[in-house]
Amino acid sequence: MWGILRLCLAVMVSIVLAACGGGGGGGGSSGGQADSNKSSGDFTLSASSLSFTAANAASLVASQMVSMSNIGSSVANVVVLIPQEAASWLSVTVAPGASYATVTVKPAGLSAGTRSTTVRVSSTDAAYNTLVSKDVTVTLTVGSTASSSSSSSVPAIVAWNSYDGTMDPASYGALHLAGGRLGSFTQIDGSIADTLPASASSSSVSSSSSTSSSASSSSSSASTAYFMDYMTINGDGTLRLDSSVAALNRSLIRGVNSSVQNPTYPRSLTFLARVLPVAGTTYDVNTRLAEFELAFGSSRVVLVLRGDANSGNVRLQTPQNGGSDLVAQLDMSQPHIFQVTVALTDASSGTINVYADGNPVPIIGPFTSSALYPTYVVGQDHIQFGDNRNVAFRSDLDWMIWTDTGAWTPAQMKGKLPSGLGVTTGY
Image (cartoon, rainbow, N blue to C red; front, top):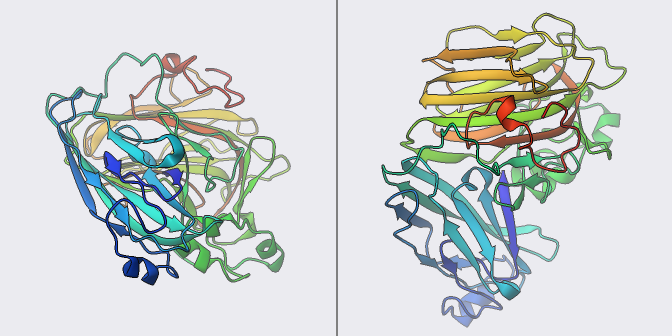
C-alpha cells in the first residue's frame, strides 16, 4: 500500500526536499535542460538513497537534504508515494502553501534493526496521470536500546491501518494509514491472462489504469483481465468480491512491499476483517468467500474462508512448512468478524491465533511452530487479499484493519477499533 502526498511542484523526501517550480528553485538547474524535459515530464533528484541512524527509540541522529530540479513545463503536479508498511517510522508534513514538505523519521517504539523502504516521486499531468517516476531508498537503523513492540500493555490509541469498503481499494483515500495519512492499495497483475466472457469484460472495473502501468497495459484488451475485474463498490460501505466471471483469475490487491533487513524479534501483528456471504450464492469447495495473506519477511499466514458447511470452512493454509491446514467450522451463511494474531519470536518461529466475532477463545490455535511456512517474497512484508486460486470467490468485504503494535486478544481490542467502520459487534 502507498500513502500518497500530492504537492504542487514541491516534494520532500528526507528532512527537506526543496521547493521547485517552473524549472527554477530547489537546485540551480539550467534553462536548457529544463526545456529538454518539457515533453517527457522529467525531473532531477539530487540523491537516490538516504540513511538515518537512531541511537535509541527516542532520538534521531542524522538527517539529509534532497533537492528536486529540472522540471519540464508539462508537469502539473508532483506525487510522493510512501509505502504503508513504513507508516510506523516515516511521516510527511506539507508546509503551508505546499512550498515544500517535511519527511520525518520516527524511531520511537521500534525494535532494533535496519528498515529500508522506497519512496516514489512521480511527475504527473493535470489529471494526475504519471509522466515520470523515480525512487529514493530511505533506510533507518535503530540501535539495540530501542524498545520492543511486543509490550503486553495495549496503547491508549492503537495505530490502525484501515479500509472501510466505501472506495475502490486502488483509489487514493481508500486506505486510512496509521498516523492519520491517506493512501491506497497497489494492484498486482495475475500470473496468467484470464479470458472473460464478453459481458464480463465490458463491466470490468477500470480504475486499475490509474495506479499500475503494468496492470493498465495488461488489461487493455477487452478479453483479458488481470485485476479489479471482480471487485466492485456496492455503495453500502462494502466491496463485492466476485471472481465467478472468470474461470481462472489469479489477480490480487496488495500492500506495496517494504523490506526489513536484519529485524529483531519479537514482531507481531493483529489483523481483523468483516466478511459477508452473498445472498443466493451456492457455496461449495469451488466457490469460496475470501482469502487474506499476511507476510512477514520470512514467513507467512494465509486465512482461507469457505462458504460451504464443510467442517473445515475456516482454514489456516499450511501454517507449518511440511504440515497441513488447520481448520474450524462456522455458520458461514452469516457475516463474521475474523481476527488473526501473529507473534513471531524469530524469522520462522511464532504463535498464531484465529478468533471469530470477538469471542475470547480462538477457533484455531494457539498454534506454535518453529518452522512457519516461508513467504513467497523473502525479505519483504505485505498484506494482500483477492483471488489467487483456481476457484471462484464471492463475498462482500465490509472492512479490514491491522496494526503491528502487538498480537492482541479480542478482549484487549474491545473499544479500540477505529471509529466509522460500521458493524463491529463483539468489539
